[in-house]
Image 1 (cartoon, helix red, strand yellow):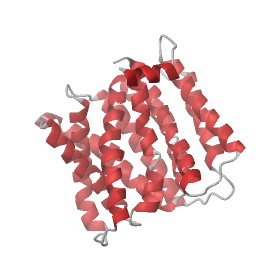
Image 2: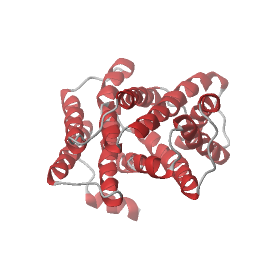
Image 3: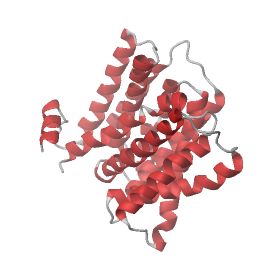
Image 4: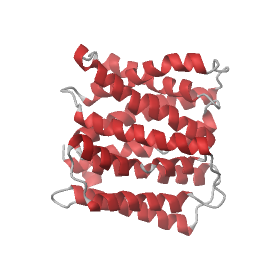
Length: 298
């Protein structure tokens, strides 16, 4: 598959993740970050494992355990803490430092050259998200912001290490192993540190099912496909799509405002993504609308 098509399908993952903030606040029981993270990861991983029917070699288990802990256990736990304590858009803004961190980790762990244009694209996207989200009415919380920043560090490191330790397995298999590892790490902490879940409503079950199937299994298969193929700097800026989706959902479903300044900020964010992709393709071509149609046609 051509790399620009992989770019397109990889971008679907942060598009799905942009709905996490809405689902968390509107469908899930409050204040269960560990339990919700575990229920999002472990069932999804087991479902994929049933499909692939492959287990990692014993020598690879420590790496899978670390990757699952970074990409799912730590990141999702901190993400839900931030989502519970901050407005969805503020959470997305804090997490937007992740592409800058990926550039640094890719240099340290993969020997990738730090390019000024990549720094510019990541910083431009961060500024755009700040304009998009941080209105005077946005409430801030020190614990929520700390959780969001720490989660960004975990995801950035997990993204780079996933590229470094790619096994000779399918993306489906690699995703299943990481989800199970992340869920198993979360399981004892959720039982120890959080009370039992209350009786779940239909909305709670729908929210958990969505996060497990779409927000975990499907989206991370797409994401790790990109991790295996695209450069870390290229894939990391795709996460800027999430706050745009979060704001659009808030406007469409929660009657939140969407003004001309925010539309301008969205344009800045999309331009920053384009700059990053343009810089990371040798042929200097970017996916256009005709490529999208051909992708679905084929």
